[in-house]
Image 1 (cartoon, one colour):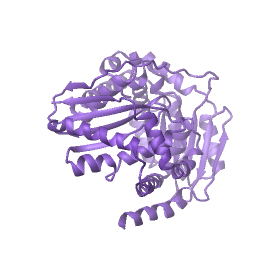
Image 2 (cartoon, one colour):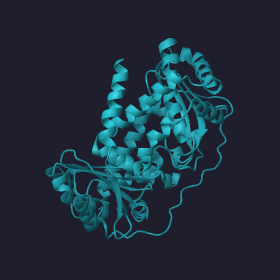
Image 3 (cartoon, helix red, strand yellow):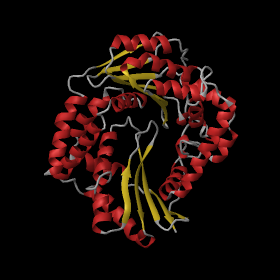
Image 4 (cartoon, helix red, strand yellow):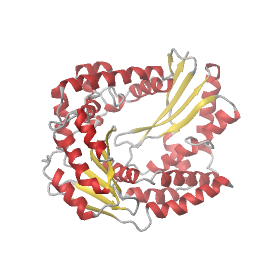
Length: 430
């Protein structure tokens, strides 16, 4: 009863706060940059996202990590501001600026008080348009990123993930390497590499800015035109590295590891974010995992006591994605857990989802989705996220409606389409 009331409260209250009666507008700067604007009646705050669709997906794997290193260096200083001055100027306004490097897009977030929107945008523009590319800062940031890459080896989950993606994707595909890159490629990156990557990212004609907050449209338009309207954009499309078919092991990939626990990954080939099955696969992911009443959690952890961590993942990607099931467990339970996963997937393909389970899962997804849209920053994020992935910003509001119309027939049809194939299997074994 408590869970039902929570979901009801979320859907009725937050849906009106997030979507109800609030229109999203778009306009273009003189140079063609698209701006997505949404006014809110919240506190006097605003959030801006500045993103380019050029990111890790466009890297050559021989130079993996260059996008992350570039943004790390850009965040430290500009030609006009030292590292200390940059930090001081941002903090004196009560603002926050940080970068986000994803596989399929990259960019900046600016959170500020509405009254300081102009001054805060000036600082962000200085960071974007006048990077110093300081050699000492580059070496320092390179060392920090390399240390973070090395530290992944101390986590069984991250170790398994890194082995999984390197097997699952072609070695020349950017998805086969973590976003931070590899130790050897990071060591070889030069200042010129960063400058070349910078030019690709910030000359892209598909740069988008989203602004959400309690600030007038005229003010937003005037400020953005002043600071970003002079950017020169290219008319050319940036090409990604092509994906070749990967020859994966027919049998399980068993890797000896230093950890006391074991870790299993099952991964299936599934389509990109623009495929018609995208939302159905997202819903299936929640039926199986991502919550404490998901089938994987209930069957493998609660009933059998096999797992200390278990879930499913389906990332939204521009290129082909994967549907992953993972479980961390004691090595003595490996065979039982594998049989359990395969039984759950077989049942998903052979038997329709119960209507109550389907309803409960949809309510859970709606609740999580709406709760995650409370802040102006998250609203700005989702608008630009949809735009960067090619779905369009309007899709963010349509997503819940599409999800609500998915039937048990849709789920079993989609399950048989993708999960009757032999998955990639990885076992990390002490």
